[in-house]
Image (cartoon, rainbow, N blue to C red; front, side):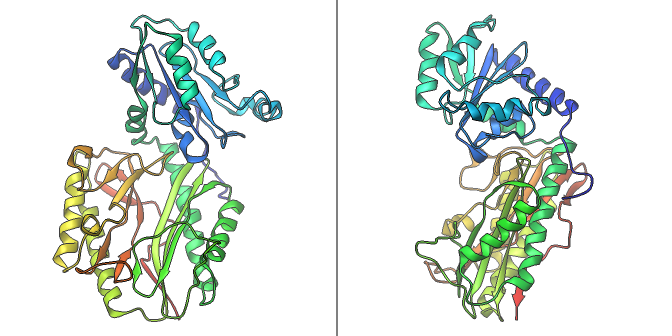
Length: 396
């Protein structure tokens, strides 16, 4: 952990709450109700409740009124000791109390909220059905509208303290990458490798890990969580795709790249060059006011110019995304132009293109590689990495 570990302040709270309330006024909302089912899905709730707290892996909810302080809801009454963990550290959070996650508790709080517009925003995608249904039934004269995606849009732009959190998470991912120089060797299983990643991450105060791998001689384009039930072993001549991802106090960092067990197949070296060229050219385009669709189209075109299929053509992960409290609060791709948005200053950007041979099928040559974390400043991108970026690691 760094000596001057980043922390959120009351200025961060004020900045967020003003942005949320301005949007609520624009939409004519009296309150918003957000939820999550543990781990990374609680990002929308944590955008309001602030610093991480014990029990964040449980289902959590928050009601944010247009006027007055928000109220978080968590845990079951059958597990009262969980609530004591929160109350023991209450001075560290952005709220002064917390209630159990029950319909009657949430309705009781909403009864005290002034309902001038008779309209409430709700996150229908992540709230438990019984809780959502119970709240809606309790207010037949209130209009409930989807609001989960609106919060995600606000989260795309980070404060300086949020950027510092992402930078610290990225620094820890860099530590993992460096460790792989001496740790990797033929004979290791994928789950043994990611276990080493998690050890380093936890030692450096990471809260959540999201580590994906794939090993094969030619195809490292369809990465997933390591499987101990049908484990895959790294062998001499294999490539290992490493998506190293961790959250520091809830904020994500990521480093994506490949390791080769010996000299890689020549076609993989060509794919790697195409991917690096595409990432560099895409990064040059990223400025405030530029559409994510245009950046993704540039990445697609550069990969095609090298004679390979781009991500859309062989259906692997997108070219990149915006990172904050959630791993993806805005995606770079050309599959759906209507999902594109304009880039803004203080967005944290991850770019990770992929490419494959023209007749691609599983186990043919395909590569997902080259993920760099940036922050978008007034004059363009700046790397968040603590060490020089390396896209391909060759283990002799």
